[in-house]
Image 1 (cartoon, one colour):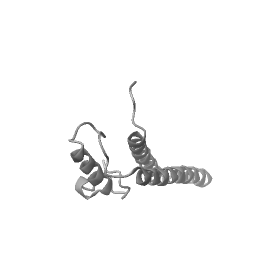
Image 2: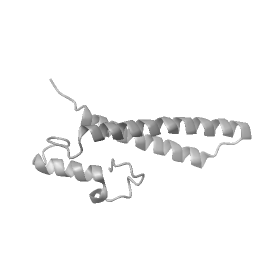
Image 3: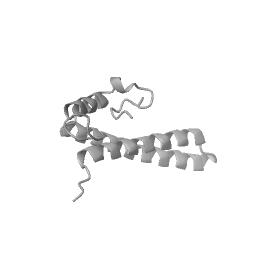
Length: 110
């Protein structure tokens, strides 16, 4: 899965994604052990900035979904296709947010 935020996260090749390139480089340096072990090629500041942007977009989709629902109630019908697209995009953003949070706050088993 591509986390670079190009909006083409399923169709883009992993080699073209800046986040994936950095992650793969970090795994190579760490010897390829585990999912996120060793250094990740993207620094923490960049990940936090990306996380902030994704959260903002996620909130914007909440507003868009609410507005579409309200407009649909006024017209008597809701554009189900557009609603499904917005919800799918929102879910994809949530998955990307969770993946970045996992990188920033790894689980520590004590």
